[in-house]
View 1 (spheres, rainbow, N blue to C red):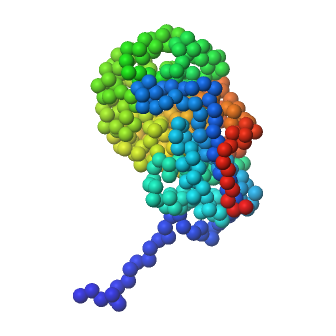
View 2 (cartoon, rainbow, N blue to C red):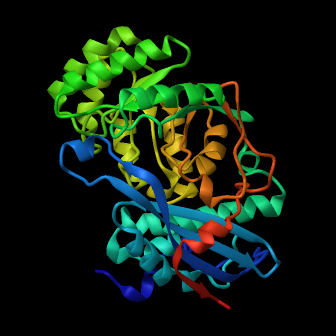
View 3 (tube, rainbow, N blue to C red):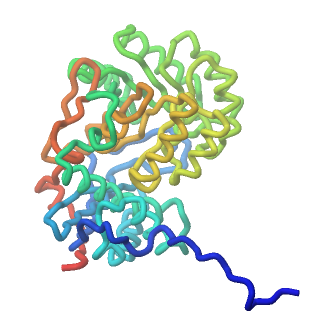
Length: 396
């Protein structure tokens, strides 16, 4: 018979995300959050627009996080949203920010768990993780600055430069002539690869555009294509077989982002590598791709998956599978993360974000150079401040 007086329940270990221990080195003094809208020079369309699922992109919303510690260290981080979600990112981050005051900014993993639990009612993906991302990236920037190291060096860099390809010149809103001009400009500026958009309702139009672009590149640099999730499995397989003689670097997002089984089948059937992952908003969602051997190139986006902390978890599992890495967008962050990845990666060059930052990333001989500046090596311009529509500070 059970006697409660003679039994004891083992003590439970401290849970992640709660009080810091005696090794606390510093404390977060203040947090400032800002919602910024970056206007684009012209409306941008990919396959999601041509299939009627979305409207052309005219601006990008950014959530910026700036943190200052009691010891005088500071960090800058950001996440973003296209077409919708900017105000929600900002609102959720504001709900979480008070949880940061007094925390040791070096405890990035513990703080990530704490914030995730603080917002558990809205889940562990989507807006919830993307709001945490700006804070997490800011803390990693602060940590690297405190060490006096570029973030890539803090993480343990494998290389000081990363092969880079351009996407911003290859959208479906651009004519073939405009894409040709953009290709020439990119190659002249040192870009090492070109990606163009496909996935239109009529695949034959894609094939004609691809043929024109391939002829123009004439083997000067690798070429990638991106269907932005707009094909079904049959169309993706047929298109993939037709373009195999072109020796493409990869076919990106041929299927729905969550169709790990379909991507895995394509990866088995086609010689052309398969890439996807940019639309997934958590580390766990990427695990489905990794477990299924669904990609040759995995494409996590640190601002979408919750920041650098979960991004590194994805990389650990992808490295074990010998997958290549090609992070999506936000080259200011992903250059450092790609430089620290074991297997030779790509980083995506977008010139859209240039007005936000005072510093310009160097590109030479097809590769983007890791800056020697501490942290991410970025600071906000006056224009970024001018485009701020809301801002709020905590702890001051």
